[in-house]
Length: 244
Image (cartoon, rainbow, N blue to C red; front, side, top):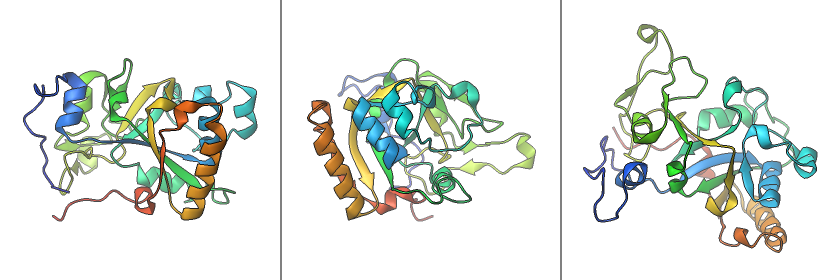
């Protein structure tokens, strides 16, 4: 980690030909977006070829049989038609709640996995960017490169009134990390599995299970064949920061 707070001065990156959000992704060195799910969600994604928003999870009988949402209650009901994705690192505090602290999935009969996505999905039409958790009272939410860059503001205030809550700052963060770890990329509808680059799990046993599922579903969906499976327990923990 470099600890820089500003990206290189390459908003248009003439050498790559990228502009707008694509150039901003490259300038910040963002190599991945992430979305976590249960092993049941993993099966559904492999079977359907799609990472689906909550509104789409009961769209067919197969998913109805394995339906197991990450969170018990969504407090942003107007946005359940969007897939919530994180930049560089998962929202570890939300993951801690979903995975059993205090109660959601405490006794999960299975395991958790993280999908890594090609960051260029952030350039697709209809994508929104939020400065903090989408349900928080002072969330900034916008499309386009301005919305994307707002996730990396020097300070983010998640709650109102601002005077009653401290700011989150960029101290110790890499340029590829949003100021608030709970910032979201909201992708409309479904994300095709062709944009998934890897699946991360915490143990070798979980990796074996994922590879077995991939081997089974690849016969029906050749587009799964490029997906890498990696064991990376650190990916499920709080994001790393540079020495201060």
